[in-house]
Image (cartoon, rainbow, N blue to C red):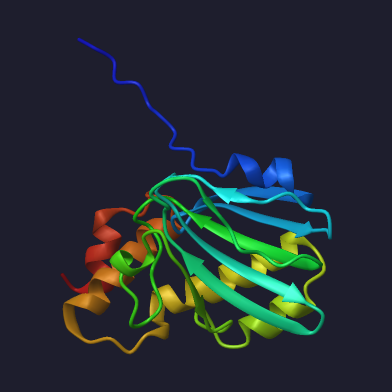
Length: 189
């Protein structure tokens, strides 16, 4: 009998840690999120490149009292990220295929693209909370709270689509440990 090896999928952008200032990351293992990260770009920052890793990133850019938000999918080859100097960034990296996209966006649109989205696309008042947050831990907590609320019950979808989102959210939130019996009881199916 052959033993099956377990492999951990690691997605990442190696240039981020090397070519940014104040880079910090925090691993995450729920809701399809693999890590949160933060960094800044000084005036003399090197060009930052993205490399193909299959993941989706949500990136919040804080400059002065303004917050801009972007979502980007995997790149097809190494490409320059058009980021602003003198800005602070907070990012959320998702495992391949695990990010719930804002209304009206498809995964196809994100390949090799960075699209500006509302700072509140993943929860009411999220932009305000992120502006006030002082640490990576606070930013991550605010994002997780908003994202989980949206996954479990914030959308007004109908039928099977909503049921599927709910079941996925419960599975992700439990780290894959929610019993099927519990899902059957909660959903009636």
